[in-house]
Length: 138
Ligand SMILES: [Zn+2]
Ligand SMILES: [Zn+2]
Image: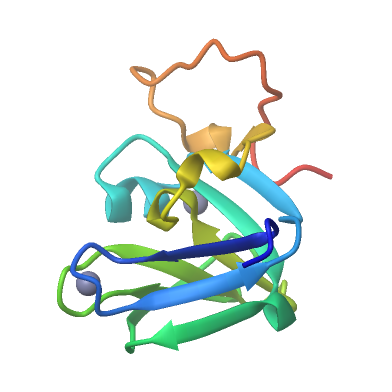
């Protein structure tokens, strides 16, 4: 297996995925959906081109909500263990957003920013020196 292959899955092992290449983005996301679905003040996500993503095994359940663009966001999770795995964002149709902690080796992706800090919780502050954006950068 090449060093640029990232593999991951859920807690129960029903759902497994693989992606290749360098992530287009790695960020700590403080949006309310990441907070609610992770049970934590933020979730760390990375994005890869959909062409570089492959579902190896299992089926996800999904939940659709309206993103800040007004367009649907579809969050996929394991129907058995409930672990959030990846997200399809209508306004960024070429990218798959993946929860970094679902990787077998989460340390292989390195976050470079905090996003959606407008909804960050006041009791969650990380002095890591990374840039903070109120929403998405740019
Ligand atoms: Zn599972
Ligand atoms: Zn988020």
